[in-house]
Length: 298
Image (cartoon, rainbow, N blue to C red; front, side):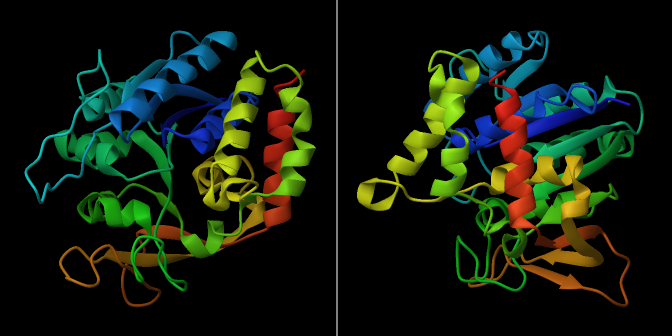
């Protein structure tokens, strides 16, 4: 069975890696919608690149849309600009894409904040029952956060959205920082991917160039390992055996002045609302991703 997937990606090199990898296994998954959320200029560039990738693989009919540009609850009241030609109705597009799939078939793979998905669940509460599941990269339980000392950046960007998704009754798989933090594009892995860059004008070459630029643009200018947490939801869908986890009831702190965005997991006494993946075989994960990306060079 080819499972329909909806990719809610970050508009960066890691997001493009996730999309390119997803396109290499058409017998297993097929993107039916690609969303990007972030800064308008970055989203606009990412959307154009994604459309090129999809056309190259004969999927020019797959919609590429801008996700919701800000959190569900705006503290400053300031509006957010959108890429030219997009209406910003990412949640409405998402609802339509889910309803267009057979009931219980589509999986959401989210690598950034959960705003667009949460708004879709608020706008159309029944749409959750139409999903097979949600896999997202976010949260931190037994490690320091990367947004604050207690909060991971995707959840911290929109705690209300994360809380809404976890309360929706949809099967959720959660990949917190302690699971994804060591999944990085390091020098050895990049050397294994060198063949991708042999044809710079190809789609694989363009993605490779973006990865190289991301590493070379890091702190101190060159060769900085970059995180691949954005790809982890796809890996969890394609290769669940390289992960270990447990069911838990996860709460999101939405009010605390110093704890906003914190995720707390309780394993007993409450109905589980998420499968929390705590461990990942990093070598296996990098190997799966490497092999998928190298298929794109053939």
